[in-house]
Image 1 (cartoon, rainbow, N blue to C red):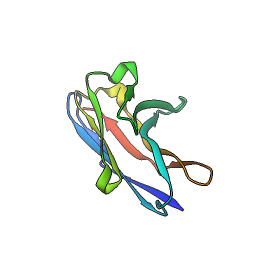
Image 2: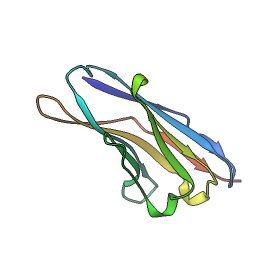
Image 3: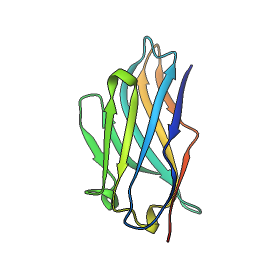
Image 4: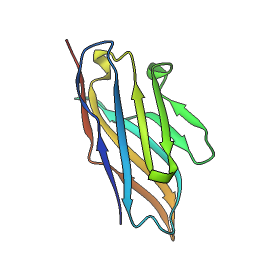
Length: 120
């Protein structure tokens, strides 16, 4: 079984920065990771994709975070990061890490979520 552990959330003032981390552990042997990404869910809203990094190196970002957020990955550590700059109150949400892969069958794993609050 694969687990994702997120860290780095917290309270930050508008215009500030945070870096989220998501480390994958457990039974990764035999699983080909095809993507790692970040989603978020604000109160009363649906979960939305924030950024995704695919195994080939391609990325996609939510339009509202382009130019402010950067997703990256340390393959040796099976860790994905989300650097968030110029944060806005509307970025406030629970951020979830997601891993997609293929083993004997398709694999999808979610982290427990980390709260990001942007407020003065």
